Amino acid sequence: MQRVTPDRPWPLHGVAAIRRLEQRAAAALPPHTLMQRAGLAVARLALAVAPHARTVWVACGPGNNGGDGFEAALHLKQWGKEPVVTWLGNEAKAPADARASLQRARAAGVPVAADAPAHWDLAIDALLGIGSTRAPEGALLAQVRALRGGPVLAVDLPSGLDADTGHATAAVQATHTLSLLALKPGLFTAQGRDAAGAVWFDDLHVPAQDESPIALLSAPPAASVRAHASHKGSYGDVAVIGGAPGMAGAVLLAARAALHHGAGRVFAGFLDPAAPAMDPLQPDLMVRAWDSLDLKGMAVACGCGGGAAVREALPRAMNAGALVLDADALNAVAADAQLQALLAARGRRGAPTVLTPHPLEAARLLGTGTAQVQANRLAAARELAQRFGSTVVLKGSGSVIAAADGSVRINPTGNARLAIAGTGDVLAGMVAARLASGEDAFTAASGAAYLHGLAADRWPQEIPLTAAGLAIS
Image (cartoon, rainbow, N blue to C red; front, side, top):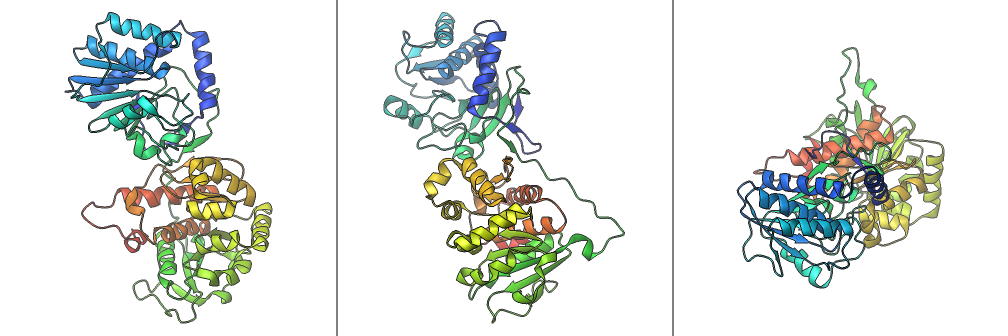
């Protein structure tokens, strides 16, 4: 059993692959083995996360997830705890393995009660597993809502959460989740991070090497070591184009971030002719008229605070050596078939391109609604990447990074302190800096998203996080 930490590229498997793993293991092992292994793992983690708990409410659902709960309750009883099981199933209709585990728990003296105990020190959510496809309702919904107010350990995934997408209309809010057999992408994006709490993993001694993951958790980017015999030209030029009237700050945030993220030279190309001629807080930024820059040899971040004026700059920006499209540039593309054609053509010729939409911008590009994007963030990011031949960073809780070849990563870093104006501009500048250094688009986007979130995770709690501070961190 391992705690899932953002230190490696953890593979994430979809429900279909996990079902195949279950079927192969069930065929190769003695009957009931997997459920017994799962229950023992849950009980061990329960002791680890709540060693002093006495009364443990084990909320069991009608399927095999409930069977895992029965097995966990059996072990906790044997170890001197006081488990109380509630069960929403029917013994005549229960799966054979779950029914056998119920009988084992009863034989061990585990009480099966109609209602949850009035007081509990730890709750185990064994209501729903990966087989659930409908939102909880009725008595099940009531138990989902009751599983709060103390430490909650979810078995496999929080009940009500979609394992593949992280979408939920009502889900248990666990403090810990033990993912079994394989890690599920839904634990790390959309509602998943709020619902799952700390994620743990146990493969139950069933290796998953025969199944390809549908995504990876991003790992820390490789550390770059600068050669002593190098110069500013070795690390590339970045141009930031945006800053319509009243929005010059967006360009400065992106440009400062690019500079502090290692770009050799950074140019600020304001769309507002009345913009300042220099940045007094960062005088090493070079301010130029945007249309005077030779973009073909640069990594360009376009759209930061661009307003409607960015439409004029986009045809030239499409010829940049490497390109990051953010914010108003994405909105302009979504509204203009000609710009969409230019972007798709850029993708066909393999020019490095990264799109960094938030869910509403992604919805505009796809011609759908924000709710549809959020319902399946991996699918939305993958569709955008393939449509435009670009790498896509779909921002949000568990940002999804998708490449045109179908590769997908979920970023494990970051927190809600990033939910302020300007942090997206900072990310665009960071991606542009990594592109300027020669990284491919998928690597640059993944690395920038990881470090952007990590900076927020390491930000001192007593100091307010601002985009200006993040840009130079």
